[in-house]
Image 1: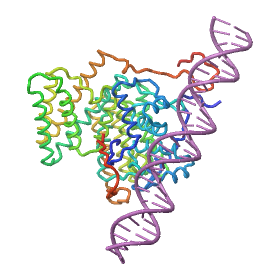
Image 2: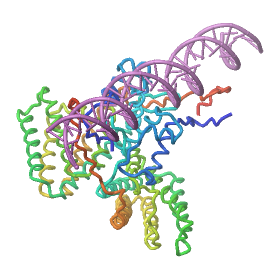
Image 3: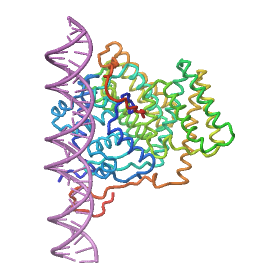
Image 4: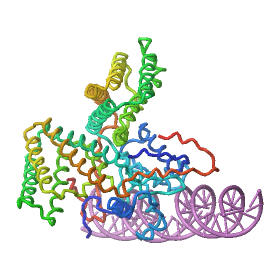
Length: 253
Length: 253
DNA sequence: TGGCGCAATATTGGATCCACTTTTCCGGCC
DNA sequence: GGCCGGAAAAGTGGATCCAATATTGCGCCA
């Protein structure tokens, strides 16, 4: 008997979405490159029908762009886009902290905060960062931020913050803190944020989180400016459109 | 980032998306109701292929929910969801004001602010609100808020705020200000916000906008609580049976 | 009479097929 | 030699068809 967990059924569209998202966020598919349906469908082992549905969904998520009769291509983000994403993410996560601090959180949530902070302490205890422990720290970090958004109890914040991760090389899966001092300070922020939330110090928690995220953003921006891979040069990709065809005024939504 | 269509040619998927969104936001399709593909495709005059793509896109937008092999149904929003949406929208639009005020806006943008405010003045000049003028005021109002987000120059804010409109009866197409005093005060907010942005008074502009949106939200909530149409009662809609169940007794939990 | 099981039906998921648009490529023309 | 035009090739959009899953209905049995 298969697992009876509620709605565990997975459709092939989900798999395709995940696979393509992965390729894009990982940088395997470069910005601007076309997503040929025949090619992709064969590569992923599905027909074009679920593939096209998946592409439409990813386009909704903003990772790829669509043009009628010309297909999909990987979207390219400018440095300004990344910067803007971090700015908004900082405010939203700060807002989540404010809400979480204002609420009367259940004991188990507070305990979970303690666990996550302690786990970070353990990972950093050595005084140097063992590269092998980075994935563990990264998981803890993600869990910490997710916990706050869950505690804020506002699904919109969660959804929007997740969307700001939909930027290649800017998602939380990319970890660029090879400097122990920086990561140590970052985890110190975690301490203070958890404390502030537990103590109901809403404004303090908010401001701590805003700086916490803003600084991470600045760090990333510095890296990107130093090593401006082609990924981030926003290609206008403008095209002098062909002559024929009716001009159907779209009245863009 | 859902709104990024810069193309011209319209595909049938777009039409279907727009049609279904319309039906949902207008309240024609009630929360919880199933979206039968055969039925819908015939009703809209397209085959199931583009329809299903459209449904997948709308599901990404959060207006409908999907369950594998069981299709789509219109999502129901709780009062708490609406409240949460307004709270985030208020912060985001406030943020947009802050950014807009900090920037050095081009002269034509400032001029456009003046036009919109003046238009509102004209509409309200009579001292009473002619119902026939409501659509005009609504358009002005939408344009005003859009202008601020455009001036903030952060596409994420714009995208997220638009997403908070994806709630039936809570979108900016619903206009519930039949009270002249309230609408007058609201437009007075517009005056002050435009002035603050033009003067570079970022914090003032932000706080004005937060209150501007928050109050509108409270007003809507009051209406919804007074007249709780079925639309907003969050139906648990729990599914009774999993697959190939032999034991189907209670087990409601 | 009421619940269980199995068959019949309805509905969704995915694959294939055809039509239309776009792109490429090649030859003629200036 | 380069550019324009048109035909061939490639690729996308949409419709239809088949398979798999879910839902409904009916008859059987306790």
